Length: 175
Length: 169
Image (cartoon, rainbow over all chains, first blue to last red):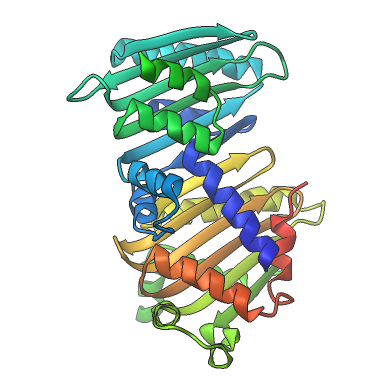
């Protein structure tokens, strides 16, 4: 039983970090793609869970979760799908222009981050990240996150969950 | 006769699927009332009692892969996925990783959840659908229950087939 519960928790937690929102990317839910989708209802429910009030990072985590609407993450090493991801992202940006927050090349990986700003410049309503892997074993990641949150909170989340691109986001939020 | 016609008219539900499939070859099912926790032997605090009271029963349906029924696995998996959509479940989240996946679904409004459905699948081992039925369940209640299960050391033999599916790689 314990094992089952631990597996369940392990399965649930990472999924909280990965997710995408826009149906434009739903087609990537297929064979050869690792996907995680978390919907608003999940965030709402998770936000009501009591955590140790002394645990500051857990509290910060809860606060952030309440501000999220939808998270989708797709990850693949299949070249064909990567090409498709690229063109889908391009097409999406044409349809829904987002501001390019940053573009980084590091260790053969190309990271691009786009945002839709909210009321203030650090408030974000939508974040789209595309990490193109450098080699056949280096997976490419497409992540979409919507809600109403602060950039600095997201870098906290990526750290907490050890998501790809966390370092890049941290740099971005300090700008 | 009329009754039969009427019931045939109704759209398929996960409940019906459970009843149907639990009789079929290749499937196994488990029904547990919350009594299986032997809660009376444990000292429950108010929160745990409340959590326990919010749940009525646990239904589990398991399909076991045996190396020759891959086509059937795909078919039945698609059916369950379809039912989760057509039977008005809210999908909370889903994860798919190489060769398997899981999804968490609920029925009910906000904190008044009537049903939790956990769907796990893995090509090599099979799939499992776990339904937790209750009234006004909250996520907090579910977490409390998980702790309770650990405390009570519930007979894991009953749930072993399920854990076999969960075993990855």
